Image (cartoon, rainbow, N blue to C red):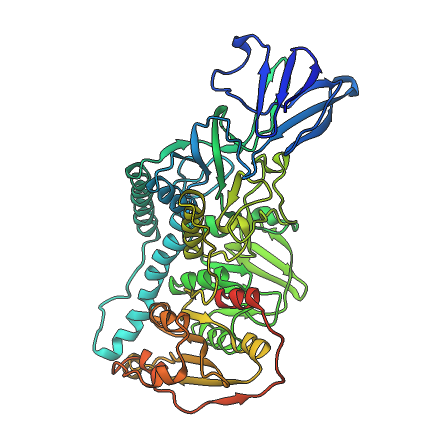
Length: 583
């Protein structure tokens, strides 16, 4: 049964409602509206005279002030079928993805391979992101994992040159590093990778649109007219309709607002500096801070790390936290603990000073903030269509990555679940199966391995000792702390730390941790064993490869300590997942 809503305004608008769809007929001159405007939900300056409601239909009123402070109403009408999609409406695409990062590209490519019509919009390429620049590939490929790892490789050579003397190598002069060569080669590689990602989308049949996308649209028709529609995407004024919209815009570095914060750089800028820092203060104690500390230390910068807490890497295993800080200190990195930044000042000679609650440190060429990232959800039109977000701007989703609006989904860092590239890939693939294969698929956050590419690096999977005790009570801990074979001839103080966290009752390996050379590569393989639920007996029955550091994981026989606690409460899946990712 249909009912009509009579609306009077200039221009005149007549709207017909039904239980499954809405057809909007605007009696407007065709020259006044873009030809691409097809069957949207309009939000116009109208006078509401009468209204009636039918099943699965909502009308929401938005107000704002016009000239002379006159108040006028914005009426928004939408009607959805039982599955949240207007089945009577024709769409340009089955899926429109805003943001071509890891999760968005994976979801779009899979959806296209499943037969869906898909479009992706992304900002133009740049090495540093902004409101107007981004690039296909997203944070990981362009200003995260990949360029960071390239800089890690570059910085490791200084340590390897030092190691080589014990193996008979000598040099007529000290090796020199050219920062500009590194930056040029790194940027060329990023250009190559973003081109590969574009080709992957093209070969999958995905339409790639360059520009800034947002949900809904605003057009100028005498006065401002808004179209608030959870099936419409506006890309720099060009309008597209989609049965489903995916938000995968990732996050951005966060710099706290303190006096002088404009003198600081973030991780984006640190990957693309015109010159290498001579002396750098890095504010933060997380994985980004430690990774950049190792990079610049390896490139012979003087590095100071300022952290608010007593220890680095909050959420990681306590022994690992202590071990990596000790090893980094031995390499010349200075840690300033329990210091909160209060102000940055710039001297006449261009050097920077960092004031904290404990005093002022001077003479820095750079001050870098590695104080976390925030979801990149500003100015996307999400609030207007009813997408719920938390106080930090992260989009709230259910276990299938669906938002509070049925036609809109979100994956990756923008949801602030587990902010890891492989997790975003998993979420994107699961969403494509849910939407286009009719196979509801939940991402599985159990035993997600993670790494910190500090120097030495960290690899881990499963529970830390602290989380294991909290969840299981009775725990056996196996550890090894030794000098690796490679360090015996060099005389360097390098060491390796390895740890197994085992449930005493079931013998199941709950967590596996390593800090030392090649830890991430080693832990990736052992992650399969932990994910499969193998026991300590299974590890013991495995023959090791000799001589390697990794063989310690299958040769540790005697517990370092046994922890016996009262039976814990059941069911802490979220805690387990976050511990597994090191957050």
